[in-house]
Image (cartoon, rainbow, N blue to C red):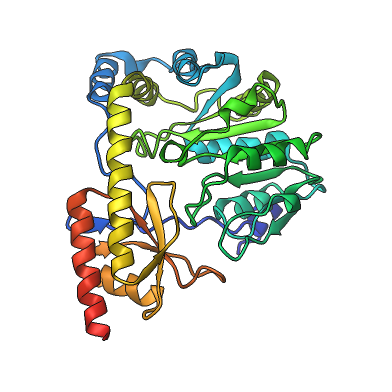
Length: 355
């Protein structure tokens, strides 16, 4: 710690992302990336931008991308905000809607960036314990002094709460903002976007990283009442008007325009998810009913940390969380069918060696 650090830096405990190993032979199933490439239209759009456009600043208002996202979701462009990945959108949301001195609420088992942002922006928080089956109780989120933020489906548990559950939380926090983080919603039944029209305190945050294969481009967005979107724009423009570069704007816009490719890719991942789930159960795993592009599993005869370590030694990277309540689970990103076959063979071999 340096004497030159500000109080903000001193109280910060940075988020720790999944391991990124520079080894092409590793089967990487730990950061929930899409195993398939983005739409071919993305490459075409990026190549056009490379033909002399990079000398010019990108659009600070990102109008075309906002329009395409709006059309995809059946809303107006004034209800869409675009940021440099959903993590930046979430950070701006903490600044725009949550206040120091008023505690916000989020699940005790959830996306670990929430407490990082809360400490960074000096916002107190209360964590809500999950149920025994890892589902979320609704009533403890009612009447939050400072607001609510939670993922749906939740991470890392992979569980989805239906829209009646979401709406009950929104309705019972009429004077504060409820943020629903839908990073994995395209692999789940329904988005809360349809509730935005009737609830001015609801903000839905999504990303192009998962279902649209653009994790490397960092494009996230929020959908909400125009007044909420205006607040996010005010925060963004107080930091950097040009948060999204030309290549990212072009690539993301093209990805949204190729609905057929999107539908096909999402379906493949869902089908592989179901096949993997059944195969893991046959190997003796308890697998939570996932509505994401990953599964959350535990085994009664072997600790999750040992499985994680042995898989890593065999060239397969999954995610283990050293956190009370979930330390005997590990998370597996849905890869290609070939990658899942390799994983299952290694797990079968590892488990056989323990018997």
